Length: 178
Image (cartoon, rainbow, N blue to C red):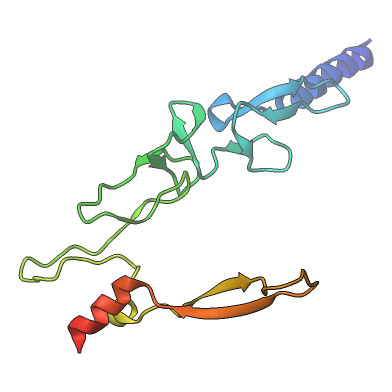
């Protein structure tokens, strides 16, 4: 009888130990129970919402970059916000007084143009440069094709004359320069 009581006590104690060792799926770590534990199988976790696994068993999950942690929820960063670290809130893009050089994304802040020095007299220019030479250089002359049918009986061939024509605006510009 003592042996039976000892066996029951041991089994009860063993059952408590097994239940105490069961894996937990902490909600504050982005995890929820997918399958409860049994006497032969541990509980299985899964990441909830937009959390992604930080451990292979999904017992601990993280709120990845491009997503922001608000309270215990992982939410995609809205337009105008970004995050570059896991488990951090979304931050607002900075304001650029001198204009945006590179737009921001959900995973990066905007990059601003350099600030102007008040002593500078030259305003910032675009990356599209137009040279004065390009404005003064006329385009190549257009070739007009003039087809003339010969006089007399109809023939199978036609004579073609090419005439070189300069646009009048360029001729006037050249007159002013010379």
